[in-house]
Amino acid sequence: MAYQSDIAAMSGSIMKSSSGLLAAAITLAACQTVATEYDKPARITDPDEGSRAALQQSVNAALNTEVVLANDALTNSSQLFVERVVPTSMEGSPAGGRTMEMPFEFRLVINGDDCVLIDQRDDSRHVLQDTNCIAED
Image (cartoon, rainbow, N blue to C red; front, side, top):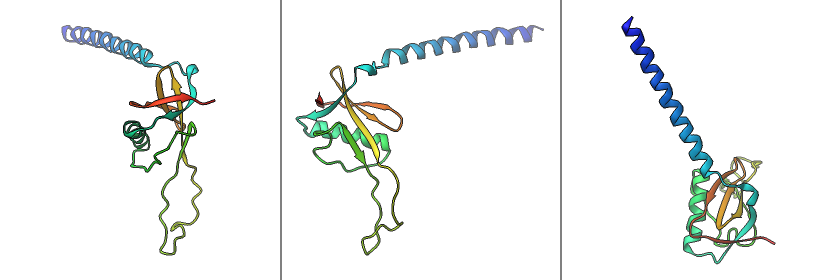
């Protein structure tokens, strides 16, 4: 019988520890939540090596691959579309036929002082370091 009561005592302390960890995780997540109602469509101003690198790293991480972006990406619009590179045959036509896949879409917003890149597939948010942006008109 003593063996069973020891197990019950241990499982009770494990449950208390687990619920404490869960409460801490929820609190931490709530602190990191950004008020999205303050998002305003934005575009990058004064792009430089740092801002281009931040954008490149965020898009690469979101798509889990290396992409090629134009130097003026997100400077004229808050939307960024990234298409897959389609392999071509020796004649120059698409090797697999016509591609019907939709491009990946990202949106740039300003929230407070942060320039935030949003992946439209899952609404994941990537704060762009070393980047200046202004709200679109």
